[in-house]
Image (cartoon, rainbow, N blue to C red):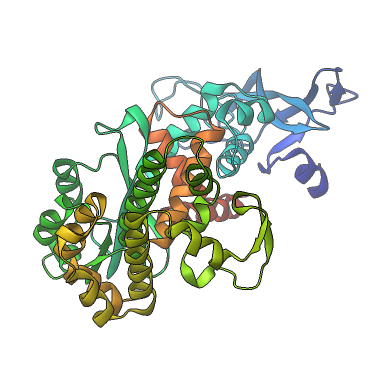
Length: 443
Protein backbone atom coordinates (compact mmCIF):
# COMPACT_ATOMS: atom_id res chain seq x y z
CA UNK A 1 0.00 0.00 0.00
CA UNK A 2 1.63 3.24 -1.16
CA UNK A 3 1.64 6.57 0.64
CA UNK A 4 -1.20 8.08 -1.42
CA UNK A 5 -3.49 5.17 -0.57
CA UNK A 6 -2.64 5.48 3.13
CA UNK A 7 -3.46 9.19 3.10
CA UNK A 8 -6.76 8.58 1.27
CA UNK A 9 -7.81 5.86 3.74
CA UNK A 10 -6.52 7.74 6.79
CA UNK A 11 -4.04 4.99 7.76
CA UNK A 12 -0.91 5.99 9.70
CA UNK A 13 0.30 2.61 10.98
CA UNK A 14 3.19 1.53 8.74
CA UNK A 15 2.50 -2.21 9.38
CA UNK A 16 -1.19 -2.09 8.41
CA UNK A 17 -1.62 -3.40 4.84
CA UNK A 18 -4.53 -4.19 2.54
CA UNK A 19 -5.47 -7.89 2.75
CA UNK A 20 -5.04 -8.56 -0.98
CA UNK A 21 -4.04 -12.21 -0.58
CA UNK A 22 -7.31 -13.23 1.03
CA UNK A 23 -9.62 -10.79 -0.77
CA UNK A 24 -9.33 -10.04 -4.48
CA UNK A 25 -11.08 -6.70 -3.82
CA UNK A 26 -9.98 -5.50 -0.35
CA UNK A 27 -12.26 -2.46 -0.65
CA UNK A 28 -15.97 -3.35 -0.93
CA UNK A 29 -18.81 -0.85 -1.47
CA UNK A 30 -21.83 -2.48 0.16
CA UNK A 31 -24.22 0.38 -0.65
CA UNK A 32 -24.84 1.77 2.83
CA UNK A 33 -21.21 1.41 3.90
CA UNK A 34 -17.68 0.69 2.69
CA UNK A 35 -15.71 -2.27 4.09
CA UNK A 36 -11.90 -2.24 3.85
CA UNK A 37 -10.05 -5.47 4.59
CA UNK A 38 -6.66 -5.05 6.30
CA UNK A 39 -4.05 -7.39 7.71
CA UNK A 40 -1.78 -6.52 10.63
CA UNK A 41 1.28 -8.71 11.09
CA UNK A 42 4.84 -7.91 12.16
CA UNK A 43 7.71 -9.62 14.03
CA UNK A 44 7.21 -9.51 17.80
CA UNK A 45 9.46 -10.52 20.69
CA UNK A 46 8.28 -11.92 24.00
CA UNK A 47 8.09 -9.17 26.66
CA UNK A 48 9.47 -11.63 29.28
CA UNK A 49 12.27 -13.60 27.66
CA UNK A 50 12.92 -11.45 24.59
CA UNK A 51 12.75 -14.40 22.18
CA UNK A 52 10.85 -14.09 18.84
CA UNK A 53 7.24 -15.14 19.36
CA UNK A 54 5.53 -17.75 17.16
CA UNK A 55 2.68 -16.71 14.88
CA UNK A 56 -0.51 -18.40 16.00
CA UNK A 57 -3.25 -17.56 13.45
CA UNK A 58 -5.37 -14.46 13.12
CA UNK A 59 -8.26 -12.74 14.83
CA UNK A 60 -10.63 -10.54 12.80
CA UNK A 61 -11.63 -7.27 14.44
CA UNK A 62 -13.96 -4.61 13.00
CA UNK A 63 -13.47 -0.91 13.68
CA UNK A 64 -15.01 2.32 12.43
CA UNK A 65 -12.66 4.29 10.19
CA UNK A 66 -12.82 7.73 8.52
CA UNK A 67 -15.72 8.12 6.09
CA UNK A 68 -15.18 7.67 2.33
CA UNK A 69 -17.52 9.13 -0.32
CA UNK A 70 -19.83 10.35 2.48
CA UNK A 71 -20.38 6.74 3.64
CA UNK A 72 -19.35 5.12 6.95
CA UNK A 73 -16.22 2.98 6.58
CA UNK A 74 -15.60 -0.29 8.40
CA UNK A 75 -12.05 -1.50 8.85
CA UNK A 76 -12.06 -5.30 8.94
CA UNK A 77 -8.60 -6.08 10.32
CA UNK A 78 -7.08 -9.53 10.56
CA UNK A 79 -4.76 -9.17 13.54
CA UNK A 80 -1.87 -11.58 13.99
CA UNK A 81 -1.90 -13.65 17.16
CA UNK A 82 1.42 -14.52 18.82
CA UNK A 83 2.52 -17.29 21.16
CA UNK A 84 5.61 -17.91 23.29
CA UNK A 85 5.72 -21.50 24.57
CA UNK A 86 6.91 -22.29 28.10
CA UNK A 87 10.68 -22.71 28.44
CA UNK A 88 13.43 -22.36 31.01
CA UNK A 89 13.71 -18.63 30.23
CA UNK A 90 9.93 -18.18 30.12
CA UNK A 91 8.21 -20.71 32.43
CA UNK A 92 4.65 -19.59 31.61
CA UNK A 93 2.96 -19.31 28.22
CA UNK A 94 2.70 -15.76 26.85
CA UNK A 95 0.14 -14.74 24.22
CA UNK A 96 -0.13 -11.44 22.39
CA UNK A 97 -2.14 -9.91 19.55
CA UNK A 98 -0.99 -7.33 17.03
CA UNK A 99 -1.94 -3.76 17.84
CA UNK A 100 -2.88 -0.96 15.44
CA UNK A 101 -1.53 2.51 16.17
CA UNK A 102 -4.56 4.11 14.51
CA UNK A 103 -6.91 2.49 17.04
CA UNK A 104 -6.54 2.59 20.82
CA UNK A 105 -6.38 -0.64 22.81
CA UNK A 106 -9.80 -2.22 23.40
CA UNK A 107 -11.40 0.37 21.17
CA UNK A 108 -13.35 0.05 17.91
CA UNK A 109 -13.18 3.61 16.62
CA UNK A 110 -10.17 4.96 14.71
CA UNK A 111 -8.18 7.75 16.33
CA UNK A 112 -8.71 9.87 13.18
CA UNK A 113 -12.46 10.05 13.90
CA UNK A 114 -11.84 11.17 17.48
CA UNK A 115 -9.38 13.76 16.25
CA UNK A 116 -11.96 14.99 13.75
CA UNK A 117 -14.50 15.19 16.60
CA UNK A 118 -12.07 17.38 18.58
CA UNK A 119 -11.77 19.72 15.59
CA UNK A 120 -15.54 19.89 15.04
CA UNK A 121 -16.09 20.71 18.72
CA UNK A 122 -14.64 24.15 17.94
CA UNK A 123 -17.51 24.88 15.51
CA UNK A 124 -21.01 26.13 16.32
CA UNK A 125 -23.01 22.93 16.03
CA UNK A 126 -24.83 20.73 18.48
CA UNK A 127 -23.32 17.55 19.87
CA UNK A 128 -25.93 15.37 18.14
CA UNK A 129 -25.32 17.01 14.75
CA UNK A 130 -21.59 16.50 15.23
CA UNK A 131 -22.12 12.80 16.04
CA UNK A 132 -24.36 12.39 12.99
CA UNK A 133 -21.72 13.98 10.75
CA UNK A 134 -19.04 11.54 11.98
CA UNK A 135 -21.34 8.50 11.94
CA UNK A 136 -20.87 7.79 15.64
CA UNK A 137 -23.14 7.87 18.67
CA UNK A 138 -23.74 10.89 20.87
CA UNK A 139 -22.02 9.07 23.74
CA UNK A 140 -18.85 8.68 21.69
CA UNK A 141 -18.61 12.46 21.34
CA UNK A 142 -19.27 12.80 25.08
CA UNK A 143 -16.40 10.44 25.84
CA UNK A 144 -14.11 12.50 23.59
CA UNK A 145 -15.04 15.60 25.62
CA UNK A 146 -14.50 13.73 28.89
CA UNK A 147 -11.03 12.62 27.78
CA UNK A 148 -10.20 16.22 26.90
CA UNK A 149 -10.93 17.36 30.44
CA UNK A 150 -7.49 16.30 31.70
CA UNK A 151 -5.82 18.47 29.03
CA UNK A 152 -7.85 21.56 29.89
CA UNK A 153 -6.36 22.41 33.26
CA UNK A 154 -5.07 25.95 33.84
CA UNK A 155 -1.56 26.69 35.03
CA UNK A 156 -2.05 27.47 38.71
CA UNK A 157 1.51 28.77 39.08
CA UNK A 158 1.02 31.78 36.80
CA UNK A 159 -1.40 34.66 36.22
CA UNK A 160 -1.05 37.57 33.75
CA UNK A 161 -0.41 41.10 34.94
CA UNK A 162 -3.78 42.43 33.82
CA UNK A 163 -6.87 40.30 34.25
CA UNK A 164 -10.62 40.86 33.89
CA UNK A 165 -13.64 38.80 34.76
CA UNK A 166 -17.34 39.13 34.16
CA UNK A 167 -20.39 36.96 34.75
CA UNK A 168 -22.74 35.36 32.22
CA UNK A 169 -25.89 33.26 32.44
CA UNK A 170 -25.06 29.55 32.53
CA UNK A 171 -28.39 28.19 33.76
CA UNK A 172 -29.05 25.52 36.35
CA UNK A 173 -25.47 24.17 36.17
CA UNK A 174 -24.20 26.99 38.40
CA UNK A 175 -25.43 27.38 42.01
CA UNK A 176 -26.35 31.02 41.38
CA UNK A 177 -27.28 30.59 37.72
CA UNK A 178 -24.27 32.74 36.76
CA UNK A 179 -20.75 31.68 35.83
CA UNK A 180 -17.58 33.71 35.29
CA UNK A 181 -15.20 34.39 32.38
CA UNK A 182 -11.57 34.94 33.41
CA UNK A 183 -9.50 36.72 30.76
CA UNK A 184 -6.03 38.10 30.16
CA UNK A 185 -7.22 41.56 29.16
CA UNK A 186 -3.84 42.62 27.76
CA UNK A 187 -3.74 39.87 25.10
CA UNK A 188 -7.53 39.29 24.90
CA UNK A 189 -7.11 35.61 25.80
CA UNK A 190 -9.63 33.61 27.80
CA UNK A 191 -7.91 31.94 30.76
CA UNK A 192 -10.73 29.84 32.18
CA UNK A 193 -14.47 29.49 32.74
CA UNK A 194 -15.41 29.48 36.44
CA UNK A 195 -18.53 27.62 37.60
CA UNK A 196 -20.06 30.20 39.96
CA UNK A 197 -19.73 33.91 40.66
CA UNK A 198 -20.39 33.55 44.39
CA UNK A 199 -17.59 34.92 46.55
CA UNK A 200 -17.18 31.66 48.40
CA UNK A 201 -16.57 29.71 45.20
CA UNK A 202 -14.40 32.43 43.64
CA UNK A 203 -12.20 32.52 46.74
CA UNK A 204 -11.66 28.74 46.68
CA UNK A 205 -10.94 28.89 42.94
CA UNK A 206 -8.34 31.68 43.03
CA UNK A 207 -6.64 30.23 46.11
CA UNK A 208 -5.57 27.34 43.86
CA UNK A 209 -3.15 29.79 42.27
CA UNK A 210 0.11 30.29 44.12
CA UNK A 211 0.58 33.42 46.21
CA UNK A 212 3.41 34.65 43.97
CA UNK A 213 1.09 34.34 40.93
CA UNK A 214 -1.65 36.37 42.64
CA UNK A 215 0.80 39.03 43.85
CA UNK A 216 1.96 39.53 40.24
CA UNK A 217 -1.48 40.76 39.16
CA UNK A 218 -1.35 44.55 38.68
CA UNK A 219 -4.90 45.41 37.57
CA UNK A 220 -8.31 43.73 37.77
CA UNK A 221 -11.07 45.02 35.47
CA UNK A 222 -14.61 44.25 36.68
CA UNK A 223 -18.13 45.63 36.63
CA UNK A 224 -19.66 47.64 39.48
CA UNK A 225 -20.85 44.60 41.44
CA UNK A 226 -19.86 45.60 45.00
CA UNK A 227 -19.21 42.13 46.57
CA UNK A 228 -16.23 41.61 44.23
CA UNK A 229 -14.22 44.45 45.82
CA UNK A 230 -13.44 42.86 49.15
CA UNK A 231 -12.57 39.58 47.46
CA UNK A 232 -10.20 41.25 44.98
CA UNK A 233 -8.36 43.13 47.75
CA UNK A 234 -7.97 39.88 49.67
CA UNK A 235 -6.77 37.71 46.77
CA UNK A 236 -4.82 40.31 44.75
CA UNK A 237 -3.41 42.76 47.33
CA UNK A 238 -1.15 44.56 44.83
CA UNK A 239 -3.83 44.96 42.13
CA UNK A 240 -5.63 48.16 41.16
CA UNK A 241 -9.37 47.76 40.60
CA UNK A 242 -10.61 49.26 37.31
CA UNK A 243 -14.31 49.88 36.71
CA UNK A 244 -15.34 48.82 33.23
CA UNK A 245 -16.56 51.65 30.98
CA UNK A 246 -19.47 49.66 29.57
CA UNK A 247 -20.94 48.94 32.99
CA UNK A 248 -20.43 52.55 34.09
CA UNK A 249 -22.55 53.88 31.23
CA UNK A 250 -25.00 50.97 31.50
CA UNK A 251 -26.06 52.24 34.93
CA UNK A 252 -27.34 55.52 33.46
CA UNK A 253 -28.62 53.77 30.31
CA UNK A 254 -31.02 51.58 32.29
CA UNK A 255 -32.13 54.50 34.49
CA UNK A 256 -32.85 56.70 31.45
CA UNK A 257 -34.89 53.95 29.80
CA UNK A 258 -36.85 53.47 33.01
CA UNK A 259 -37.59 57.21 33.22
CA UNK A 260 -38.69 57.21 29.55
CA UNK A 261 -41.21 54.45 30.31
CA UNK A 262 -42.45 56.37 33.36
CA UNK A 263 -42.96 59.45 31.16
CA UNK A 264 -44.97 57.32 28.70
CA UNK A 265 -47.19 56.02 31.51
CA UNK A 266 -47.77 59.54 32.84
CA UNK A 267 -48.83 60.71 29.37
CA UNK A 268 -51.29 57.82 29.01
CA UNK A 269 -51.42 55.00 26.51
CA UNK A 270 -52.33 56.02 22.97
CA UNK A 271 -51.58 59.73 23.40
CA UNK A 272 -49.25 61.65 21.09
CA UNK A 273 -46.53 61.81 23.76
CA UNK A 274 -46.84 58.06 24.45
CA UNK A 275 -46.51 57.15 20.75
CA UNK A 276 -43.56 59.51 20.19
CA UNK A 277 -41.56 58.26 23.19
CA UNK A 278 -42.27 54.66 22.22
CA UNK A 279 -41.37 55.07 18.53
CA UNK A 280 -38.14 57.06 19.02
CA UNK A 281 -36.75 55.12 22.00
CA UNK A 282 -33.51 54.33 20.16
CA UNK A 283 -32.83 58.02 19.52
CA UNK A 284 -33.30 58.80 23.21
CA UNK A 285 -30.68 56.21 24.18
CA UNK A 286 -28.23 57.09 21.37
CA UNK A 287 -25.07 59.04 22.36
CA UNK A 288 -25.31 62.68 21.26
CA UNK A 289 -22.13 62.36 19.15
CA UNK A 290 -23.85 59.75 16.96
CA UNK A 291 -27.01 61.77 16.25
CA UNK A 292 -27.38 63.09 12.70
CA UNK A 293 -27.80 66.80 12.03
CA UNK A 294 -28.56 66.67 8.29
CA UNK A 295 -31.02 63.81 7.78
CA UNK A 296 -34.35 65.49 7.15
CA UNK A 297 -37.11 62.87 7.27
CA UNK A 298 -40.86 63.16 7.36
CA UNK A 299 -41.79 62.19 10.94
CA UNK A 300 -45.29 60.74 11.26
CA UNK A 301 -45.39 61.36 15.02
CA UNK A 302 -44.86 65.10 14.51
CA UNK A 303 -47.37 65.91 11.77
CA UNK A 304 -45.06 64.61 9.00
CA UNK A 305 -42.72 67.53 9.56
CA UNK A 306 -39.24 67.13 8.07
CA UNK A 307 -36.98 66.87 11.12
CA UNK A 308 -33.44 65.71 11.82
CA UNK A 309 -32.56 63.35 14.66
CA UNK A 310 -31.41 66.27 16.82
CA UNK A 311 -34.66 68.17 16.27
CA UNK A 312 -36.67 65.06 17.19
CA UNK A 313 -34.69 64.77 20.44
CA UNK A 314 -35.41 68.43 21.32
CA UNK A 315 -39.14 67.85 20.82
CA UNK A 316 -39.12 64.63 22.86
CA UNK A 317 -37.30 66.24 25.79
CA UNK A 318 -39.80 69.11 25.86
CA UNK A 319 -42.53 66.56 26.65
CA UNK A 320 -41.25 65.68 30.15
CA UNK A 321 -38.97 67.53 32.57
CA UNK A 322 -37.62 64.40 34.33
CA UNK A 323 -36.81 62.82 30.98
CA UNK A 324 -34.86 65.91 29.93
CA UNK A 325 -32.89 65.89 33.21
CA UNK A 326 -32.08 62.17 32.90
CA UNK A 327 -31.06 62.64 29.25
CA UNK A 328 -28.60 65.41 30.14
CA UNK A 329 -27.12 63.30 32.93
CA UNK A 330 -26.74 60.31 30.59
CA UNK A 331 -25.04 62.34 27.85
CA UNK A 332 -22.71 64.05 30.34
CA UNK A 333 -21.62 60.67 31.69
CA UNK A 334 -20.94 59.35 28.18
CA UNK A 335 -18.88 62.47 27.42
CA UNK A 336 -16.87 62.19 30.66
CA UNK A 337 -16.10 58.50 30.09
CA UNK A 338 -15.31 58.79 26.37
CA UNK A 339 -13.03 61.83 26.88
CA UNK A 340 -11.55 60.56 30.17
CA UNK A 341 -12.45 63.92 31.70
CA UNK A 342 -11.88 64.03 35.47
CA UNK A 343 -13.32 67.54 35.79
CA UNK A 344 -16.52 66.60 33.93
CA UNK A 345 -16.96 63.51 36.07
CA UNK A 346 -16.40 65.48 39.31
CA UNK A 347 -18.90 68.08 38.15
CA UNK A 348 -21.47 65.36 37.40
CA UNK A 349 -21.02 63.60 40.74
CA UNK A 350 -21.49 66.82 42.72
CA UNK A 351 -25.16 67.00 41.69
CA UNK A 352 -27.38 66.57 44.74
CA UNK A 353 -29.44 63.42 44.98
CA UNK A 354 -32.62 65.31 45.83
CA UNK A 355 -32.71 67.13 42.47
CA UNK A 356 -32.38 63.92 40.45
CA UNK A 357 -35.23 61.58 39.47
CA UNK A 358 -35.57 58.48 41.65
CA UNK A 359 -33.90 55.96 39.26
CA UNK A 360 -30.90 58.29 38.81
CA UNK A 361 -30.39 58.68 42.56
CA UNK A 362 -29.31 55.04 42.80
CA UNK A 363 -26.96 55.55 39.82
CA UNK A 364 -25.44 58.63 41.45
CA UNK A 365 -24.77 56.75 44.71
CA UNK A 366 -23.18 53.84 42.81
CA UNK A 367 -20.90 56.07 40.77
CA UNK A 368 -19.82 58.04 43.86
CA UNK A 369 -19.00 54.79 45.63
CA UNK A 370 -16.81 53.63 42.72
CA UNK A 371 -15.38 57.03 41.77
CA UNK A 372 -11.78 56.00 42.45
CA UNK A 373 -12.13 52.92 40.22
CA UNK A 374 -13.70 55.03 37.45
CA UNK A 375 -10.72 57.40 37.61
CA UNK A 376 -8.42 54.36 37.36
CA UNK A 377 -10.22 53.43 34.14
CA UNK A 378 -9.32 56.86 32.73
CA UNK A 379 -5.65 56.17 33.42
CA UNK A 380 -5.64 52.57 32.15
CA UNK A 381 -7.94 53.27 29.22
CA UNK A 382 -6.84 50.25 27.16
CA UNK A 383 -8.08 47.78 29.77
CA UNK A 384 -11.84 47.36 29.36
CA UNK A 385 -14.27 44.46 29.48
CA UNK A 386 -14.98 44.80 25.75
CA UNK A 387 -13.24 41.52 24.85
CA UNK A 388 -15.03 39.81 27.75
CA UNK A 389 -18.42 41.01 26.46
CA UNK A 390 -17.49 39.67 23.00
CA UNK A 391 -16.64 36.33 24.57
CA UNK A 392 -19.98 36.41 26.37
CA UNK A 393 -21.79 36.84 23.03
CA UNK A 394 -19.92 33.84 21.61
CA UNK A 395 -20.94 31.76 24.63
CA UNK A 396 -24.59 32.67 24.06
CA UNK A 397 -24.28 31.40 20.47
CA UNK A 398 -22.73 28.13 21.68
CA UNK A 399 -25.57 27.62 24.17
CA UNK A 400 -28.27 28.43 21.61
CA UNK A 401 -26.88 26.14 18.89
CA UNK A 402 -26.44 23.25 21.35
CA UNK A 403 -29.95 23.82 22.82
CA UNK A 404 -28.39 24.27 26.23
CA UNK A 405 -26.05 22.18 28.37
CA UNK A 406 -26.62 20.02 31.43
CA UNK A 407 -22.97 19.29 32.22
CA UNK A 408 -20.71 22.21 33.13
CA UNK A 409 -17.48 20.32 32.31
CA UNK A 410 -18.68 19.74 28.72
CA UNK A 411 -19.87 23.34 28.50
CA UNK A 412 -16.51 24.67 29.69
CA UNK A 413 -14.53 22.58 27.20
CA UNK A 414 -16.76 23.63 24.29
CA UNK A 415 -16.18 27.29 25.21
CA UNK A 416 -12.41 26.94 25.57
CA UNK A 417 -12.16 25.02 22.29
CA UNK A 418 -14.24 27.66 20.50
CA UNK A 419 -11.58 30.32 21.15
CA UNK A 420 -8.36 29.28 19.38
CA UNK A 421 -6.25 31.90 21.16
CA UNK A 422 -6.87 30.63 24.70
CA UNK A 423 -3.79 29.42 26.54
CA UNK A 424 -5.45 26.07 27.27
CA UNK A 425 -6.43 25.51 23.63
CA UNK A 426 -2.90 26.40 22.50
CA UNK A 427 -1.41 23.95 25.02
CA UNK A 428 -3.80 21.25 23.81
CA UNK A 429 -2.85 21.85 20.16
CA UNK A 430 0.86 21.69 21.07
CA UNK A 431 0.20 18.37 22.83
CA UNK A 432 -1.54 17.00 19.74
CA UNK A 433 1.33 18.16 17.50
CA UNK A 434 3.88 16.49 19.80
CA UNK A 435 1.87 13.25 19.71
CA UNK A 436 1.77 13.35 15.89
CA UNK A 437 5.55 13.79 15.79
CA UNK A 438 6.08 10.80 18.07
CA UNK A 439 3.82 8.66 15.87
CA UNK A 440 5.67 9.80 12.73
CA UNK A 441 9.03 8.95 14.35
CA UNK A 442 7.79 5.52 15.38
CA UNK A 443 6.59 4.86 11.83
